[in-house]
Length: 452
Ligand SMILES: *Cc1c(COP(=O)(O)O)cnc(C)c1O
View (cartoon, rainbow, N blue to C red):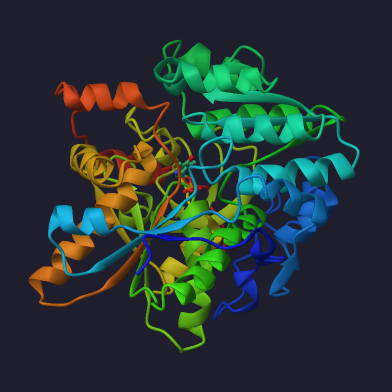
């Protein structure tokens, strides 16, 4: 039984998997905030190139990966899958734990799986510049990388609390040639409005999205790019799960549970959707589990409703699990999981019972991260550590029930730029934070009114 399960370069998938083709119900339409009617591809044209809009609404099962994108994927793909034998020993489980490692990409996470095709399609459409937001800086650095590969300018609005906590991510983006500002910034109307109300605003992904959307909508040469949530982003990430299916065959195994941390839902969807396909087809009973922080419990405590993707209410209305578009989560270290909403596809599958969700506190999550690092050697990103914790909890539960399970989780990135968070944990400065129900109820009262 091998520890490291690898594929050949020639086995990089040739197509992405589009779950829309297999969902029990068609995706809920995206609504225009002004009219309340479903939006058309033309409504999105100021923000995205048409090739990406077509992927956003596509219904065919497999979508070809352009040759130029596959060539760049080959810099780090196929990514390895590991059987975590040393972790199994460390926690004394009888279950088999596997993880897919996406931290070996140049930017250190799964995000280049979508930033590369997004930059490629923008280049093909003749755009010169891309505006985006970033939380912890992982998406910003992935987009900066993609933009530099295709000779595009990148402007990144970085959530202020992360800008301060993670200066090395900003430096990496600048090294790739991007321009980075802390959000809320003085560069946009949305940013200035927030700063007037609260000059010390720590920022949030919702606010940073408003700024990037405004930037792109007000400039001809500029597109907007999103690192998660949207259908085309999840589509690109399925390259992870498609590889996992092949690697599981080599391991002569099949997961009973597939686990991913969940911010906007892209890495969970990336590893999980190809397994959801088997489950819908009825050939397997695999459980797909989304793990989120207790301080930003979108699936576990939010409501399934139409809401804006951003704080300034500039985006179309998405039907998704949400904590309300003006929700500002606590400044926890898993910056990439601090988003008020959730991918509409993940939301709908969760609503229909094909995906489960769990929420954990950050001190428990960091404890598991160190157990993992000391056993397997890789220092995980705080976001990914939620999936590790979910996998360890799952294995221990199976042991208690006298069962033996195959558990697969996505190690979405490394934590080399998150050492300050580990320092806080090791010196006892990290505290848990449960978002109060009353605050959630308050934010939910401000959801847009939509007649369905
Ligand atoms: C951005 C990020 C996440 C959260 O985003 P999803 O879209 O939910 O995957 C998780 N892990 C890492 C390492 C990230 O960079």
